[in-house]
Length: 164
Length: 182
Image (cartoon, rainbow over all chains, first blue to last red):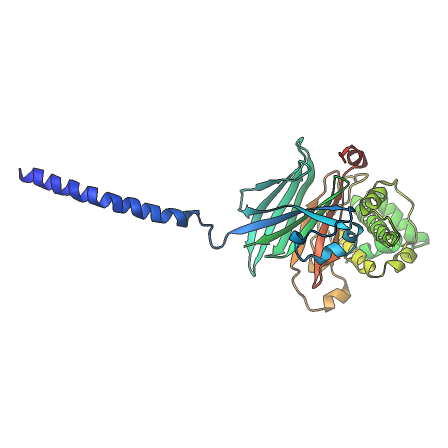
């Protein structure tokens, strides 16, 4: 009889603590979904350069490069897409470009003083490489540009920058 | 920059004559790396000339780059006079030249007919003596290596207000460009 009481007590404690455990687990979930504080991303802006006399899309933001040659040869720039791809070692991320090609970016190394080394490549839809490999050492926030692919009476201009 | 590289630049600019020019010519016959550097110099000059022509109305840089890069190989000309009107673009050309000449190990593979040699990292070793005398500031973005594959490609810097932004310019082959839907 004494044993039954003990078992009953233990069972009661277990049942009472179960909702608390579930609640604690729920509290942890949102934290797990948050990106790590030192997560890096490749911010990619896909611009379409044409001579359609439309000017520069305001969504592109301040970009003096577009007013300098050879980019100034085009009078119109439209923002087609802007994505943030997570930069993770050994885990390349892909972005489909408007012309069907795939842009792939990957983190190679985190360097001191807010520098990162990243790689990028552009592959053809049929499996061939357009830009087989590009490796860049960049300070966070600083852009580099990959341009020249033909697209709808103009060219694509990819503005890539590593950000935190 | 090594003395060999300087000699290649002088040869490219038509400044060598007689035995010196013949020596470089012989070197080019069996040195794929040297041929690659000469090709880089030629493409740099072509890019600068394309920019100079940009002043005329109706300029289409993509067409110009395509026309220049896919044109049959021409004889070396004294390009110094052509570079003068380019003004600030000369500095750009020098930067690209340093990129090409500053390559690490020489490319011993056969030179592809239309491909630009892989770009060199922007390393202090590739700076001219004048540049080396300046305070060494780490560039915010450095193109460490590029493989253009069989495509045409060029690397250059474009002004971004406070600094410069590296640009990797790739072009589609002409036949593909005409197939693209308009």
